[in-house]
Every structure is written in C-alpha cells, then in structure tokens.
Picture 1 (spheres, rainbow, N blue to C red):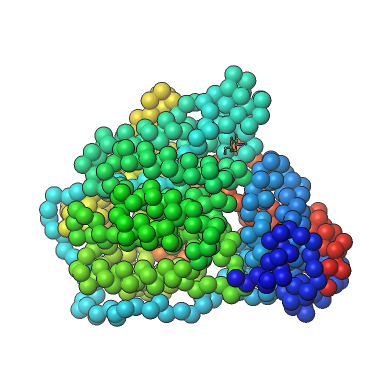
Picture 2 (cartoon, rainbow, N blue to C red):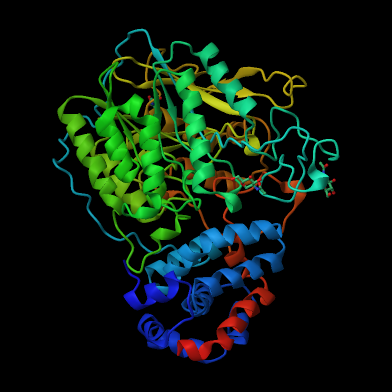
Length: 628
Ligand SMILES: *[C@@H]1O[C@H](CO)[C@@H](O)[C@H](O)[C@H]1NC(C)=O
Ligand SMILES: *[C@@H]1O[C@H](CO)[C@@H](O)[C@H](O)[C@H]1NC(C)=O
Ligand SMILES: *[C@@H]1O[C@H](CO)[C@@H](O)[C@H](O)[C@H]1NC(C)=O
C-alpha cells in the first residue's frame, strides 16, 4: 500500500531501477548521505560500538541498496550472510531469498529517522532506545464498572475440578531421519543434508525419538498425544498455541507447510474431541510473514487453519479465521468463551509490520478483542484468551502490547486466564492495573506460557491445568515431560509429571482456590526474596535440562520480565549485534529459539563486521547514479 506504482512495477518485476521513484522515496538528507561514499563514514561511525545514530546511517545505506531492487538487496545480504559464516551457505541462500523482499520493501519505504527506523534498529541491530508508545486509546464498547474493594474475580465454585491440556510449538519435522547426524551446522539437524550425514555414515546418529539439536519426529509427536490421553483422558479440551511447522526456515513452501499443518491437526483430531488452535509464526511461508491486513500472501494459511479447525469451532469462527487468523467461540460444555488471537501481527520479526507509518491496530484485532470481551461480559461468560506469542515477551511490539494490555485491564473481571507459547520455555507473565505499583492488589491477569514439545530448548513437554468447572479459574498448572536423558527414551519415551505449580509455589494455598493473578504476583515476591527459589524456576524453564547461571542483575531482570505482562515493562534491553552470533556447535539449541531469522542475523552482522558494511556500500556506490 505504501509502494508507489512506479516502484511497484520496478521492484515487483525485479527490473532495473528507474530514477523517479528513488528520488520520491529518499529524503534530501538521506540522498545527501548516500551522495558521500558511505563505507568509511559508516564504519567510522559504528566501529567503536554501534550507536542509534550510527544505526540510522546504516539504514540509509540499506535503503540505498533496497532502492536498487529486491534482487540487489537479496543478493548482497546473501553475500553478507555467507561472509560472516554464521550459518551454512544454503541456509543463507534460501532464507534470505524468502525473507529479503519483504524487508527490502519495508526499508525502501522507511523514513530515516522515524519511529519505524528506530524499531528496525532495535529489533535487527540491538540499538536505539525504544520509542515511547504511540498514544492510542482502544475503543471500548462500554466502560468498566467500578467494583467496591477492587477485584471481582468470582468465588470458587467448590465443584469437582475439570482438566484442560495445553501444548505448544510442536514443530514436527517430517523429514527427521533416525540415524542421520544430530550434530550439524544448520538451525536444526537430524536430516541427511549431506552424504556424511546419512544414516550408517554419521558419527553422531540421531535416535528415533528426538534430539535436542532437532525438531520433533512424528514418533515423539504421537507419543505426546498418547500420553495426554493416558494422563488426562477426561480433559474437557485441548489448547494448541501454534508453531506446527519445523525450523527449516530456508526451505519452507506453501505445499510443505500445508502438508505439515494438515498432518498435525489431523493427528490431533484423531486423538482429541476438541482442540482450540492458534496461528503460530512458523505456519506462514515465508516464515513470520503475516501482512497486517488480509492481503493475498497469507490467505492460504488462514484458509488452511480455518479448514483444519472448523469441525471444532464451527462455521462462524472458521469464517473469522479465514479472514484474519483469529476467532472467538463459546465452549459448548460450559460458560466460557475462547478467543484465539493472531499474535503474528504484533510480532517484531513479522517484517510486513515495519511500515512507513506503523499500523496501530493491525487488522483491527485489538478493537475486535474488546468487542468480543464486552459481549462475554454482558452474557456473564468467563473468557480464555489464547495466542501464540505472549504479549509480555521481548518479541512483542511495545505499542500493540500496550493496547492489548488496555483491553486486559478493562475486561480483567471476565478474563479467567490467558495461554501462550512461542518461547519454548516454561514461563508466565503477570499483567497489572499499575505497572508503577506492582502488588498483589494491582495484579489483574496471568499469561500462562507453555513449554514446547520440540526439544531444542529442554525436554519435550505439555501442560495439564486443573480448572474450576464454573469459573474456569486455574487451580493448578502441571508440566509433564519426557526426560530425554532416560536411557529408554529412544525406545519408549516415558512421560512424567515434572512439577505442579500449586505443589511448588503454593503448598499452603487453600485447595480449590484459584492460582489468581495475586497468587502469581506473590510467587514473584518469593523469587525476589529467595535467589534459590528463582534459580529453581530458571531451571524449570528448560524442564531441568539447563541450569542458567544468574547473578543479581540477571535475577532482577527475570523478575521484571515475569511482571512484564506489558512488553514495555519487561526490562528487556537489546544489545548490539545480539542476533548475530558466530556459529558455535557447543551452544547449539541454547539460543533464541522462537524465531530463527537468518536475515536478521545478516543485518545484525553489519554492526560488527567491517567487510559486511563494505559489501553493502560497494553495491550502492556502484549504482549511485540510479539513486541520486
Ligand atoms: C560435532 O561436530 C564437530 C565438528 O565436526 C565436532 O568438533 C564436535 O566434537 C561434534 N560434537 C559432538 C557432540 O559430537
Ligand atoms: C526442502 O523441502 C523439500 C520438501 O518440500 C524436501 O524434499 C527437501 O529435501 C528439503 N531440503 C532440505 C535441505 O531439507
Ligand atoms: C499475597 O501476599 C499477601 C502479602 O503477604 C497476602 O496478604 C495475600 O493473601 C497473598 N495473596 C495470595 C493470593 O496468595
């Protein structure tokens, strides 16, 4: 929509560039910067540590490159990626070919400096202070009624609890090959990428049921579904918070993703009577690419999810899913509304969102959420919000997280709980009515973040919630795992209860009482006063797989994150070059798992590699006459 017609023709067809659109898209200052041979300037500006201003100069350089066309942009960034040697060449090649044109289009249309260029610098290069949230009051159909004495969470019914299952990030790899190498230099292993990786040849052969360097084999997926039916055969329903497709982001296709998504939801349908699903960022092709309005590139994935879910959610919700990937539906077994959000339109790695003027409420989803919750409130229903990415995560744009939080605060009496995944870790966030005064009294909602099935950041897991059948309040949250260190894991994974939140955090909490927002706030208070408790929590995040060394500053940040139901309050501070790491086989799988972005890594390397800057600037210099 922001691409001029002439530019659309030139770039869409990958043709050589014509002068007119560049002069329209470049401001005078940007053109002037490009006019003075930038390589030395840029490097001088950033070599002693990238500043925000330095980053913005870099963005002007990238804008010059993007104005030369998608092909030039993709080509040069592929070279940058290969130069830095952080991933294999075919990964550079494939991933940047897929992701490149989307961000090239965004950068061409970006004004520097601007809110968008700052967000780009934060999320790609780890510099610039986060811009202040753009003020926006979400329209509420009705105002909140003041409740005497504060919170009005309904009293426990005292009835026999029901159970609800939640799993996330199954990331099933249909090309997982037992016996192929589990030690490789790609984002995921256990595929015979080369002859040396073949079963029978590899010196580190993968077992049949999974490996921490690999995504989920179908056998492990099936094992989890079977375990759920043993552990919770009576579960009222299942929540699946997305990311079905594996992490071979350089090799996705509509066909492969369609196959993978269809296969997973068919297996779930064969295992469970009722599943509420959400759209994960890996469902799209290219990965993460969800335009903020229902444009053609994502309609196939929304239609596919709609078809996969329609027998569970009915026609109206299926139709809503096919138009924007979200739905709201009444649970037939009780007084509960389930609202499934498409959080991909708040995700910092969704490159479609870096628009010249950022869209405040992509697809009108936040206003829609408010209207659904308003209807639930009027009907006296309780509500669950489910989604892929937690709004309190580092990966959420501050603006949309803030607007989402306004809705959570307005309808906190109706929202019984919220469920997310994406981070692969066993976590939670608390939302508050005042982030300046975070207390048990101001805690208004809990974001339950389920750990992943894929074992790349811990043991394979799922959650079982013990739930009040009338209020749908969460009475306990159990995490179940298959311990991969168990010598029998490769023959038959054994699923065991890893911990229960009530047993660990609230042994004295009255039975049958909700693990309320106040309860979870108190858990963070306990963490703050006992480093041992916090360290045990940190270890639980990976289901005991990895002990994270944490000092006082790190503990403080972790607690802030737990209390950061609104992303602007989660204390996350990006660091220059954070997304660019030289490959280290030792640290495999311990990194940033939720979104492997090769392009972001390549751009990130510009902060620290002079040669990478030179590659970009040489191409721009050669073609400068086309730009200015
Ligand atoms: C993985 O492969 C690398 C390089 O081939 C080797 O140095 C390393 O020891 C291997 N690691 C394991 C756990 O086999
Ligand atoms: C890429 O995906 C196709 C299926 O869509 C598969 O046949 C091919 O082996 C995959 N390549 C790699 C390197 O995994
Ligand atoms: C939270 O802690 C406060 C202060 O210790 C206590 O009064 C309150 O009952 C606790 N709330 C819950 C739900 O545990």
